[in-house]
Image (cartoon, rainbow, N blue to C red; front, side, top):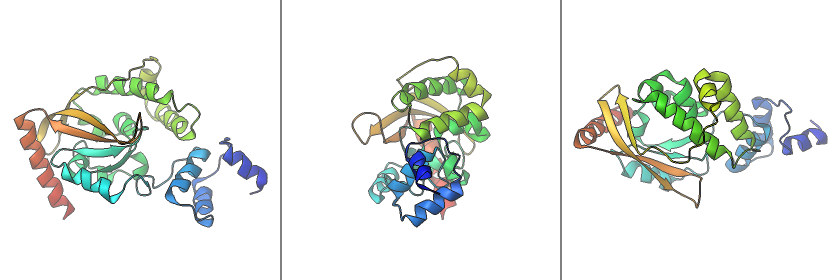
Length: 231
């Protein structure tokens, strides 16, 4: 690897560098988590362990997620990567612990993960809205390799996403009332709230507050099931 290769990498050119080479380079240069993430973004390659090396997930942030239980909550970045989550959220749509870190992305899961999809009551409407929101969000990240890589993956792996994307719809708002069909406790209705951690669009805590007493009771049961599974 010569000077030209490093220059092209810094310019985010498509040089087809492998994950193994990037990982070796990151270790050789003793990169910290933020620098490592930037390296993989420049190459347009998914880091094999993005959720376990994210500097945004502090002990304080994990404590906040735990304190809101039994309400499901997670930490997401603006690209919809799920960076951390509490126990209730981990069992809400699927067993998230069994999903590889590189696949813990709401867009990827909503379009490619069968169990996640089966847990969304209004799946087609949700997918269409997510594609429209993703298009709106991507407007500010058009030159970023990680965003382009995610778009390419979705178009490659999901015909449903290609159909929704080709509608060219743009929506900035998010549906507040959501309904899920959980395999452990049944139907759950929740109200969605985003708690932004920085000014403007960026990292956020996503919370699902039960919309009725029956949903509250079912979330409490789901938390109990998740807690037993973690013991």
